[in-house]
Image (cartoon, rainbow, N blue to C red; front, top):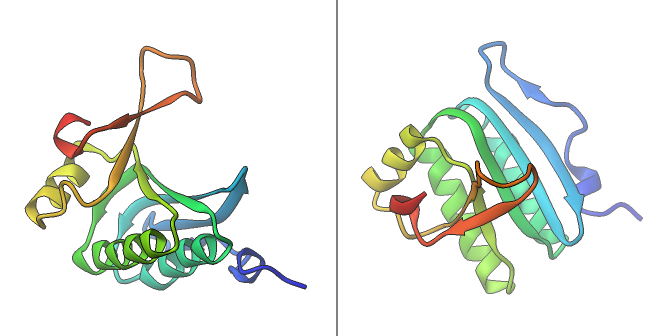
Length: 138
């Protein structure tokens, strides 16, 4: 029987403008969704599909924003909805390494304290992460 993550498209969505959503990858009860470039209406549905698939698998979801230049309001709305669903199911949705621009966008939308933020710790070995209290400290 196929799991929800198996139903996520196998294709990487690339609109030809550098916008990319990489399908979910699972590891130890965590689903990681990588985003690259500008995240907007072109990538909204694949973003939703990948994030919701992880939640349906009863996993925590980490949305990797390391390589995101811009994220629009519709995409933020999808992440808020997913965060609420994850919370209702006793799971976490976290944002990994949002850029300064992405943090400003979140703050401007009044979402500074909505998400759990994980930031890469530059003084630690690769793969180690630490949680920021909110976006202002990330």
